[in-house]
Length: 575
Image (cartoon, rainbow, N blue to C red):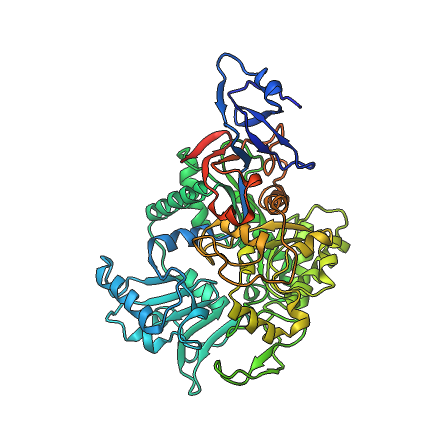
């Protein structure tokens, strides 16, 4: 046991305390003083340190862990989704979707012809019957003059009615950008579908709420995060507007989650490799304006990252993720498929020279790059760029995080390890329904499919894993997501298997999954000196669980109930 000399405010004892230190140590007791961890050890050792004013809390054998670090999510988007018209990720027909939207319109007090209606959690790929899709024409049939926009759950597709397209200044003459699609029919008319970056930019341009409404969203967001045991988040596409809302809470002394953010550099904002230094200098200026150089028990901000959106989406019908070898395409129908080789490789939104220049500039500026890399083509481009950055700035502490990695080439696992790149994974994506497993196997072929949704393969190659939910791409359900990482299959609400196991990798162990959501996530976000493990001198960010994760079947992890969340030693959630 090591002890700090600070006064001890509270001792938690008689527990099963997983510290997530380098040795994966378990202990019985922990002492907290002034928001820091003062001592860890046995009950006898730590209880001896308690003074007459020390609060003593008996854990009664319950589990205590470091707080969950969700290192890839979009918390403000998620908060807005909780408050608006929400399709709840359901598999719906076009008619069912329109009926839900119309009911919301009919009961919405904001019904002016310029009041935007944004509809979230739209499962485009699960629309029924198979092959159905939303369209401008269908949305125009709604009884409203309002601009209506559906935003898909993966945030890569936006469907707009004619009024919305008009207000977005998109028409038949709008050029198709390099980093996505503005769909047209055979006659050249807009279908209302925007894909990838155009969808995100359109969504970002929709007027937001008032500053006070944004503060209300931020308040709600941190409450639902704390309830699930989350104490730190990384917003991987952050804007000043979002940070301003959380800053109000910070200034009131009401912020209950540590906020990190990565501001995006878009492909169309960089005029060639020679412009990379200017783009990264602008990120550095934004980061300096918001970053707290030192972290204290009171939660604040961390902005030392940048976001690069490199490719698209793997699943049909979008198929814009970048592959090293071409997709196979279904030339038949959904009922009678006929999968054939194609010349379709997906999309890369940066050129290699531009991305390499940006990555090297990250090395110069000491900014950590965080990339959207779904498939092996995008992964290869980013790893090549990281290699150039490492050569230009050997020994520089820059920590690349590659997010998603749904399809990895066999040689790339070792490259992650050798280049010090972290694989940032949303484990729930490994819980695929059987029909999608079959479809993606056909789309990729057997050999490539063996590297679909890997996780443990990175660890076995010596690379680091960090967990990120990507909320609101999926529901915010941290413990369910971790369970999928440990079982590689989907589960229903009753705890029964809801699909076949994805047999392309071994299961993660409980300790591996927990480390990816604690100390290894802390490393990726470059804050491991403050958080991520329960060690003396670190900030007292911890959670207490009702159930004992270490003594129950892995199939029950989704039922985990957090009964207390601490941030800087302060109770921010109590069941």
